[in-house]
Length: 111
Length: 112
Image (cartoon, rainbow over all chains, first blue to last red; front, top):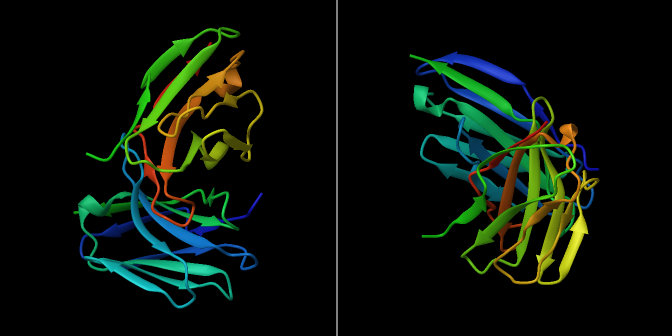
């Protein structure tokens, strides 16, 4: 079983703060790194899929970077808003067939 | 509209009574999978399928069966449910594991 670690486990910030989370994964046999946003009572929603070392992706105030050589990815949220409150999941696939999810980082943004 | 549909969304059943959770996708995706979500454990893969008639075990396959007779459907079968299978289940599909995964809305299953 692939070991995908996310930190911190939870985070509480104020509206307007910028924040970032980390996803660590085994760098050997890397295939793809996914980030998902999961709100309570909804299904996980895709944010980014990255495959190349050095990849950087951006969607509005959210961006992500990927380092496959050292096995980590960062997710950044600039100017957090209460609607950003959710659990952020990363997942790594070692090869074509399977994807392993981390336990997630729970973000709470207070007004 | 692109979607993954699973049924039932909520079910309370008794130990040992066989049940099936259906999953259907309308995106012509080859790759489908089932996950369970338990507190503190994250999403764990139960089974996956890379194409019709091709299925394989994920990380936690014990107590589950699947089939992939058609590209769009990937049912999850619990032959003899037990209380430790009480969980939130997600079906998902994608072109392959390197592409965006689309999740169903989840099925809350309680086994008493």
